[in-house]
Length: 229
Image 1 (cartoon, rainbow, N blue to C red):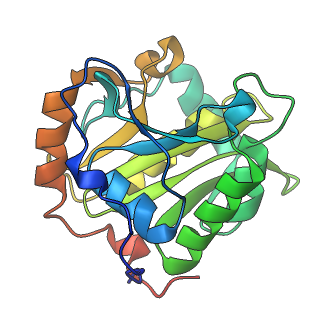
Image 2: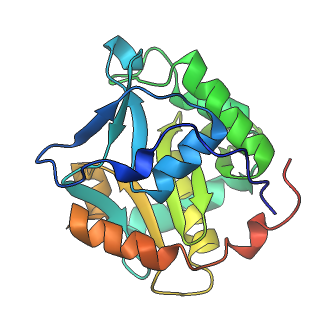
């Protein structure tokens, strides 16, 4: 089971979530207790400097991108291509984060400090990765995020082979929604055109916080109840 870190020194739970903007606050730190308090309050961090550099921004989108149980779409082409890949969980967390942080990618925001922060959460059993390998056992895609009860807060995904990130999301859906509990939700922060084709929808901040409260009562999926890595 995950290990609860010392509580944060910051009062993230009292932010004004009625602000008519996605950015709610600036500052604080990336300590494990701070990150968990943020996710439990409906916030996630992303630096507002160039390429994600400090200061840290705390975000709660007015329109939140989420994937709900039963709504994941699997294109026919993806069903045909999945057999080309091998999927694992929590076997190469740092490598997945490095793939997501590739400086050649557009919109990069994962700094060394962010990578270190999520590595600490992984060691405590809160952060998880899905890895996708090709037939030569090369890492060609994956995703990572944070699981608190019935919430999986997806942080980033990457691919080096066609359909690899889609396979990672499919594998996450199978693991996280295995019990078919309608209160579970996967948070992807913002909907994109690509994610929309896979079943991601937008919900209001108010609806997200309501669903987050329901999800908090659930246990983490069975696959992640072992001792942390």
